[in-house]
Length: 201
Image (cartoon, rainbow, N blue to C red):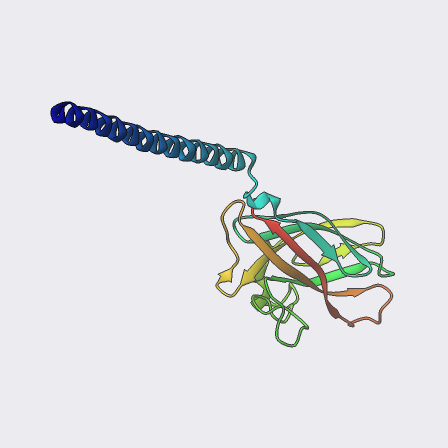
Protein backbone atom coordinates (compact mmCIF):
# COMPACT_ATOMS: atom_id res chain seq x y z
CA UNK A 1 0.00 0.00 0.00
CA UNK A 2 2.73 2.43 0.97
CA UNK A 3 4.75 1.39 -2.07
CA UNK A 4 1.76 2.07 -4.35
CA UNK A 5 1.18 5.50 -2.74
CA UNK A 6 4.91 6.25 -3.09
CA UNK A 7 4.80 5.33 -6.80
CA UNK A 8 1.65 7.44 -7.33
CA UNK A 9 3.23 10.43 -5.56
CA UNK A 10 6.46 9.99 -7.53
CA UNK A 11 4.55 9.81 -10.83
CA UNK A 12 2.51 12.88 -9.85
CA UNK A 13 5.68 14.75 -8.86
CA UNK A 14 7.33 13.75 -12.14
CA UNK A 15 4.28 14.93 -14.11
CA UNK A 16 4.26 18.23 -12.18
CA UNK A 17 7.99 18.70 -12.76
CA UNK A 18 7.59 17.88 -16.46
CA UNK A 19 4.64 20.26 -16.74
CA UNK A 20 6.67 22.96 -14.99
CA UNK A 21 9.65 22.33 -17.32
CA UNK A 22 7.37 22.44 -20.36
CA UNK A 23 5.90 25.72 -19.12
CA UNK A 24 9.41 27.17 -18.62
CA UNK A 25 10.53 25.95 -22.06
CA UNK A 26 7.39 27.37 -23.64
CA UNK A 27 7.97 30.72 -21.91
CA UNK A 28 11.59 30.76 -23.07
CA UNK A 29 10.54 29.94 -26.63
CA UNK A 30 7.86 32.65 -26.59
CA UNK A 31 10.42 35.13 -25.24
CA UNK A 32 13.01 34.23 -27.90
CA UNK A 33 10.48 34.32 -30.75
CA UNK A 34 9.02 37.66 -29.61
CA UNK A 35 12.42 39.33 -29.34
CA UNK A 36 13.62 37.74 -32.58
CA UNK A 37 10.64 39.21 -34.41
CA UNK A 38 11.22 42.63 -32.83
CA UNK A 39 14.92 42.44 -33.74
CA UNK A 40 14.09 41.40 -37.32
CA UNK A 41 11.57 44.24 -37.71
CA UNK A 42 14.17 46.69 -36.35
CA UNK A 43 16.76 45.50 -38.88
CA UNK A 44 14.22 45.87 -41.71
CA UNK A 45 13.30 49.40 -40.56
CA UNK A 46 16.98 50.45 -40.38
CA UNK A 47 17.60 48.98 -43.82
CA UNK A 48 14.62 50.85 -45.31
CA UNK A 49 15.71 54.14 -43.68
CA UNK A 50 19.23 53.77 -45.06
CA UNK A 51 17.94 52.86 -48.53
CA UNK A 52 15.62 55.87 -48.60
CA UNK A 53 18.56 58.08 -47.58
CA UNK A 54 16.68 59.86 -44.81
CA UNK A 55 19.97 60.55 -43.01
CA UNK A 56 21.63 61.66 -46.24
CA UNK A 57 22.97 65.25 -46.00
CA UNK A 58 21.23 65.95 -49.32
CA UNK A 59 18.07 66.32 -47.22
CA UNK A 60 19.65 69.27 -45.40
CA UNK A 61 17.75 72.40 -46.52
CA UNK A 62 19.75 74.03 -49.30
CA UNK A 63 19.30 77.70 -49.94
CA UNK A 64 20.97 80.76 -51.36
CA UNK A 65 19.54 83.99 -49.95
CA UNK A 66 20.47 87.30 -51.54
CA UNK A 67 20.52 90.78 -50.03
CA UNK A 68 17.98 93.36 -51.26
CA UNK A 69 18.69 94.47 -54.86
CA UNK A 70 20.53 91.20 -55.56
CA UNK A 71 19.44 87.68 -56.48
CA UNK A 72 21.24 84.37 -56.25
CA UNK A 73 20.59 81.87 -59.05
CA UNK A 74 21.97 78.36 -59.59
CA UNK A 75 24.74 77.66 -57.11
CA UNK A 76 27.16 74.87 -56.17
CA UNK A 77 29.88 74.24 -53.61
CA UNK A 78 32.78 72.16 -54.92
CA UNK A 79 35.08 69.93 -52.88
CA UNK A 80 38.07 72.16 -53.71
CA UNK A 81 36.43 75.01 -51.73
CA UNK A 82 35.07 76.95 -54.72
CA UNK A 83 31.53 78.33 -54.51
CA UNK A 84 29.87 79.29 -57.79
CA UNK A 85 26.57 81.10 -58.20
CA UNK A 86 24.68 83.27 -60.67
CA UNK A 87 24.39 86.85 -59.46
CA UNK A 88 21.76 89.30 -60.73
CA UNK A 89 21.22 92.84 -59.50
CA UNK A 90 18.82 95.77 -59.59
CA UNK A 91 20.99 98.36 -57.84
CA UNK A 92 20.31 101.03 -60.44
CA UNK A 93 23.33 100.91 -62.69
CA UNK A 94 25.97 98.59 -64.09
CA UNK A 95 28.03 97.01 -61.31
CA UNK A 96 31.76 96.65 -61.65
CA UNK A 97 32.73 94.03 -59.06
CA UNK A 98 36.41 94.38 -58.27
CA UNK A 99 36.66 92.35 -55.10
CA UNK A 100 34.92 89.28 -53.72
CA UNK A 101 35.15 87.11 -50.61
CA UNK A 102 33.51 83.98 -49.23
CA UNK A 103 33.75 82.76 -45.64
CA UNK A 104 31.95 80.40 -43.28
CA UNK A 105 31.56 83.18 -40.67
CA UNK A 106 31.05 86.91 -40.36
CA UNK A 107 33.72 88.87 -38.48
CA UNK A 108 33.17 90.13 -34.93
CA UNK A 109 32.01 93.57 -36.09
CA UNK A 110 29.47 91.95 -38.45
CA UNK A 111 30.78 93.91 -41.43
CA UNK A 112 32.85 91.39 -43.39
CA UNK A 113 34.30 87.90 -43.61
CA UNK A 114 36.04 86.36 -40.61
CA UNK A 115 38.39 84.28 -42.79
CA UNK A 116 40.11 84.48 -46.15
CA UNK A 117 39.81 87.79 -48.00
CA UNK A 118 38.85 89.67 -44.82
CA UNK A 119 39.05 93.14 -46.40
CA UNK A 120 37.24 92.08 -49.61
CA UNK A 121 40.32 93.18 -51.52
CA UNK A 122 40.03 94.24 -55.15
CA UNK A 123 41.16 91.85 -57.86
CA UNK A 124 44.05 94.08 -58.87
CA UNK A 125 45.56 93.83 -55.38
CA UNK A 126 48.26 91.14 -55.51
CA UNK A 127 47.46 90.03 -51.94
CA UNK A 128 43.90 89.32 -53.04
CA UNK A 129 44.69 87.06 -55.97
CA UNK A 130 44.91 83.74 -54.03
CA UNK A 131 41.31 84.20 -52.90
CA UNK A 132 39.90 83.70 -56.38
CA UNK A 133 39.70 80.39 -58.22
CA UNK A 134 40.94 81.89 -61.50
CA UNK A 135 42.53 85.04 -62.89
CA UNK A 136 39.68 85.52 -65.39
CA UNK A 137 38.21 88.24 -63.17
CA UNK A 138 41.39 90.32 -63.10
CA UNK A 139 39.67 93.35 -64.67
CA UNK A 140 36.49 93.06 -62.61
CA UNK A 141 33.08 91.57 -63.31
CA UNK A 142 30.46 93.73 -64.99
CA UNK A 143 26.84 93.00 -64.09
CA UNK A 144 24.26 95.17 -65.85
CA UNK A 145 20.70 95.55 -64.53
CA UNK A 146 18.41 92.66 -65.54
CA UNK A 147 21.46 90.61 -66.52
CA UNK A 148 23.23 87.87 -64.60
CA UNK A 149 26.80 86.73 -64.22
CA UNK A 150 28.32 83.43 -63.12
CA UNK A 151 30.73 84.09 -60.26
CA UNK A 152 33.21 81.70 -58.66
CA UNK A 153 34.99 82.39 -55.40
CA UNK A 154 37.17 80.38 -53.03
CA UNK A 155 35.54 79.99 -49.60
CA UNK A 156 37.46 79.96 -46.33
CA UNK A 157 36.84 78.74 -42.79
CA UNK A 158 38.94 78.71 -39.61
CA UNK A 159 41.17 75.96 -41.10
CA UNK A 160 41.92 77.83 -44.34
CA UNK A 161 40.47 76.95 -47.73
CA UNK A 162 37.07 75.33 -47.08
CA UNK A 163 37.60 72.03 -48.87
CA UNK A 164 35.23 69.18 -48.09
CA UNK A 165 33.89 65.76 -48.93
CA UNK A 166 31.04 65.16 -51.37
CA UNK A 167 27.63 65.50 -49.69
CA UNK A 168 29.01 67.12 -46.51
CA UNK A 169 27.37 70.40 -45.58
CA UNK A 170 28.78 73.93 -45.88
CA UNK A 171 27.20 77.26 -44.96
CA UNK A 172 28.74 80.57 -45.81
CA UNK A 173 28.49 84.18 -46.90
CA UNK A 174 29.68 86.11 -49.97
CA UNK A 175 30.76 89.76 -50.02
CA UNK A 176 31.55 91.89 -53.03
CA UNK A 177 33.53 95.11 -53.41
CA UNK A 178 31.98 97.11 -56.23
CA UNK A 179 31.25 100.41 -57.85
CA UNK A 180 28.48 101.16 -60.31
CA UNK A 181 27.76 103.60 -63.09
CA UNK A 182 25.52 105.94 -61.07
CA UNK A 183 28.14 106.55 -58.37
CA UNK A 184 30.98 109.08 -58.48
CA UNK A 185 34.15 107.66 -60.04
CA UNK A 186 36.43 105.95 -57.55
CA UNK A 187 33.63 105.24 -55.05
CA UNK A 188 33.62 101.60 -53.93
CA UNK A 189 31.23 99.79 -51.71
CA UNK A 190 31.76 96.45 -49.90
CA UNK A 191 28.58 94.54 -49.10
CA UNK A 192 27.44 91.07 -48.10
CA UNK A 193 25.28 89.98 -51.02
CA UNK A 194 24.61 86.28 -50.38
CA UNK A 195 24.22 83.81 -47.53
CA UNK A 196 23.94 80.16 -48.45
CA UNK A 197 23.70 76.62 -47.14
CA UNK A 198 24.45 73.67 -49.41
CA UNK A 199 26.40 70.43 -49.77
CA UNK A 200 29.65 69.77 -51.56
CA UNK A 201 29.35 68.35 -55.07
